[in-house]
Length: 143
Image 1: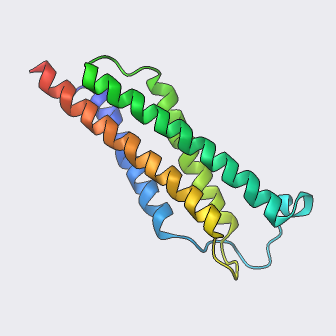
Image 2: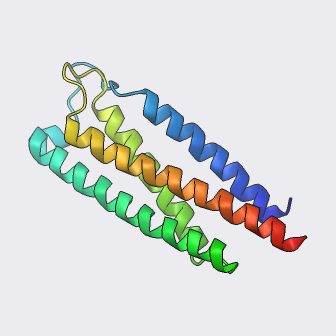
């Protein structure tokens, strides 16, 4: 396994662990804790902005997934690989932040927020799967 494959493999393990943690925790906000955003905007405005940000990450991840799969099929280099990993990390972090905000709330995550988080998680999973496919094809090509 080459250095690049090791780096991708370790990153995928890290992402899959973060992905598993995010999937299993939905009620995470400490009770009686006022965040700065609560003083500036209402819950509905905040949720709307977060859903928009999460949907943006999901769309970006979907596009990147298609790019990695195209590179795998065409047996070419993955374009902007650093950007893909950066987007995956940011999207994962955004989901984590959203879950931390809702920690301890009497009401669980609003359904729209939960669906937006799920779209990001699906995108992360798809990108990770695309990297696995790319690595498998690269390994067969090098033999």
